[in-house]
Length: 367
Image (tube, rainbow, N blue to C red):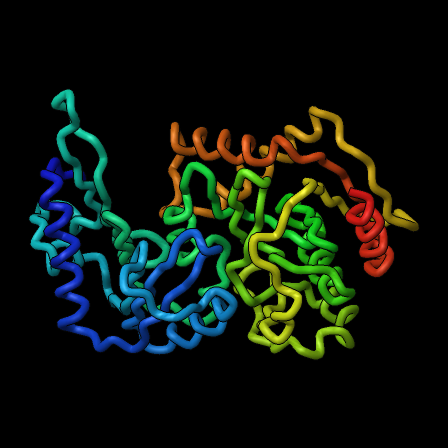
């Protein structure tokens, strides 16, 4: 369902949602999250249980309250969201059709046409989704703690939009380094980035992330900052790292691919903010290799690696990211521009994870 409505209606919808939430649900937790000192986000949890998950998994980024946050995320439990638009917002349904489950609000542009303003989606994976003017609303329908760890989950998607600035992006990738020299690893699934980045941290490397991170382009160069305080590892890799993961806390098994999830806030002394990124790295596993190797990428290979970082990020963002078209292209071009000044290397990983880390150490120290 698409309604051509004035911009003032979108503002009215925002206020209606706030009133609905605060009138029907008790506020359980208010948290403030610092996203790389670029944006501060207030998270309001009206969903029982999620405040602990948010506080724990974002423990690195949780900060002191601020009077004027840059954005606010609202979370509440909305059971049976199919009739939400009519029940809460009074959107008329065609009685001969299914209940209205999606509405897009428009406002007139300077030429008298209609520009997209905001949308409410009540049939997506998470329940009710709506955003307008840095207010993000998520009426979650029956999610359990493990759903937090789904690929591109709703908090990541909100942060992605909040951080989509000319010189800043949330990206899907990993980053570690030594002596203030970091490498950004392409996030291609199954390429070994999580294993390599976590094992490197355990062996003395500085750590930013193994999954999602914030990239910020400054006059001094590209900087990377963490968001999360948790990691995911395959059961096989966990067994190999067992003795070194003494400060990690087991959280559960992810709902996809059966990976183990750990809280690594105990290693916060290894975490780094605004870490200088000096090179781009494409990891690839070769189970037949007896030792790891590194080679500098050609311009063509570098181009593919940069595009992979951008495409991997966009593909994770789902309903709350970009649904194709010009915004996709703009994000991809921006990401390539941010990464274009970096040298790019391909690291071929062997089954010996300690040898892989030492190979990476040699590369970083040579940059």
